[in-house]
Amino acid sequence: MTRPRPDVTVVVAVYNTMPYLTECLNSLVGQSIGTDRLEIVAVDDGSTDDSGAELDRFAERYPGVVKVIHQANSGGPAAPSNRALEVATGRYVYFIGSDDYLGSEALKRMVTCADTHGSDVVVGKMVGTNGRYVHQALFKKSDPDISLYDSALPFTLANTKLFRRDLVEEHKLRFPEDLPVGSDQPFTIEACVRAKKISVLADYTFYYAVKRGDASNITYRANHLSRLRCTERIMEHAAGLIEAGPQRDAVFKRHFTWELAKLIQDDFPSLDPATRTEVCAGIARLADAYFTDALRDSMDVKRRVRIALAQRGAVDELVRAIEDEAAHGAPPFLLEDGRAYLRYPGFRDPALGLPDRLFEVIGESVPKQLADGTGLVSASWEQHGQDMAVSLAVRVPVTGETESASVRLAGKAMPKSADKPGGRRVPVGTELPALAGELRREPSADGEGTVLLAHIPVQPTRAKLGVRAYLDVAGSTYEIPVQTQGVPLPLARRWREIVPYRISATANAKGRLVITTAPLWEPSPGAGKRLRRILSRVKRKLTR
Image (cartoon, rainbow, N blue to C red):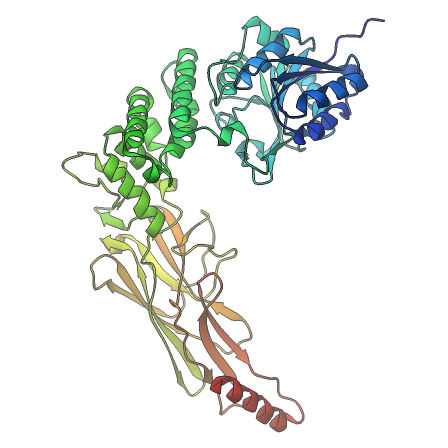
């Protein structure tokens, strides 16, 4: 009896992925679409572990469903994927990494979507496991008709999608076999360019991308120069499909903010000098060809500055920018003529001649973390009768026309306070806490910042009062943790009241200043005896 044409062929390129392979195959044969509508073509690319034997075991157990091809090692997933395409018979084809696995309803849901909407490409929600990063912006909501050019799809270019096989064969889409990294991107980009309709499904977890325990996935093994050459090939291929303009910029923003930016991250200074020079030269070639003004201005200031330094061959300045930011956070703001600049290495350096606009802070390009040097200068408490207050001086790294930046201290913390010293951006539209007490400001003694001086009344209460500084500059607001630098405020007791209170300020586990006011006890019968016992315990603690 002839088996009917399957709805979907799943392609699995396999090389030494035991024991992950077993979970992958189990997730495929257990799909709710049923094995009668499913074809699995697995190509063993010269595995030296038990992967080949495991594939044969599944082929024997599921005859006609699991088809196995054994071949000599080709060095990457492209050749085995191409081999599988030659024998695929399904109406659709789906690619899965042999160390990953699917949700049980994944294929049925995607095929139904493609049939219902006439989709040529269907992208199901993916998540990472074991620390694997998967970009999530595309999966905020389901949409039967998205574009490559006005969605987050360029940041999700893996081939782990459902493709209409007629589209694949009509345009003879195949994987470049000489790319060790990213060989799926040219295939995916061209399929999305050619597709009449692309759909995204975000209401179910379709794909689980696994980071192996030894991080041996091919993506994690490639070196800087290999990744650079592969990115160059991918961009050249895409440039042949998409003419220069906003649509090409939309796709290439991914490559400049992801692949190329990752080449000049924290590990760049540790490369040997020749490799650093070669990496910068490669980035320069791509920037000269594709880094348009519009694309540059759409990027965050840190990445565009680093790419500009690489493009100019300013290797030493690039190294210094990376090392300084790793050690101290983003550089200080310079406010001038209503504009804000970040003083990265190369700013107004006549030898480099970089335009100021590269360093200008524009909207969302404000870095997430402010510079080192943001923090508490001094803290003191005072009490007059029942009135208590804390006086704080907090330094923020803003110079120039400080009147063009709004700075204040508030006596109430925002939800989800910053986890890192130096501040975090507050979401646009967030209602900030009211200004606490009196505030004035003055230039810091070193001329490299502004000091906020605040006098904050403290009300007797059980609640903790986390004091925060808020800095509004260039259209963005930061919440700045006020740190004690390990110096707590003295303990104060309100001895003359029936219910004594205390006030203290300490640096918590995250390095923030927490001012605490709390009653030592509640008044009740026998209060005098309990008060003496409490005071005795407090005295013993203070004298230890």
